[in-house]
Length: 357
Image 1 (cartoon, helix red, strand yellow):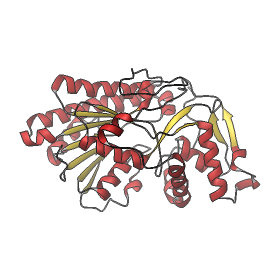
Image 2: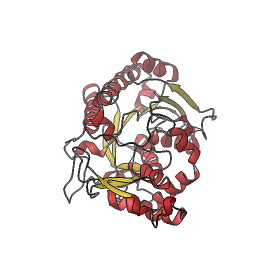
Image 3: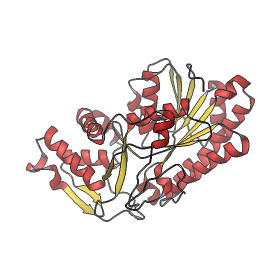
Image 4: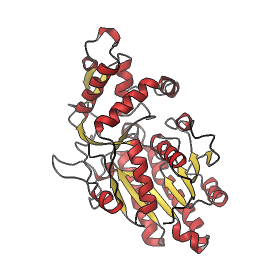
């Protein structure tokens, strides 16, 4: 692909990973960026405040399920690259209300694919060669691992939750558009992301903010579920490398090489907070005293672990941050950005338990 300055259409760019991608594109490249985001509860334009005045950045609030709107954006903006990140993404919410996940993740992806394909079919030949549709997905489509082994790009899909089933469905649609129409796609499946600007329903920001408030730190089941953790800024750089250097039609797994049990993650957060914020609420001896084990999530997968050798050896990408360096940066960011997370919590979500089923 020609990586001269081009036009990137980003869906879901006000979300956690999407905003990291846009910050990278604006700050580290010369590309022009169009951000289409519905601004649901997890979309936050404050995550893009440092790039919002850049003349290469454009934003429109809108729904990826609106085919008329999406088609008009393709016609008017004429992107060279689509990075499709818009999705409902929280497993617990999918248990409580799967319909929205089916609508956004499956129907929305089908609308994006068909609008993009129609646009691609009539553009000039030189533009058609460089056009890419990059679908960003999750390792959760593969289901649960035992104590050994890793997910590879050839692992069979076996999703456990309404969320992962909807993402698996969207992955299949993307591949079908490539095989049926020759449409130039790329797919990435990533491990658990963490870092600045993450909505506090996710494990790491929820633990940080609850601890600072002296609230219980709810750990599902026995806390022995294993996840591979990927710092979001490493992920955004990997996504850019895939969409500019990856082979059309291929899938790339992106992992952080940081397998941790959930209870290890919570213990590490507590240790960092004991060091960085020693004035604990309620005269606690340690933030660990707030840990509370709660009823596990229905259908909770035991272990995820990614084999990221393909992206390492074919595209020369490895994560820069270890879990310890990335988590320290993350905790420091939340300690120094109280206004951001307070504004986020002014909405309907108040860190309550979701996904009880």
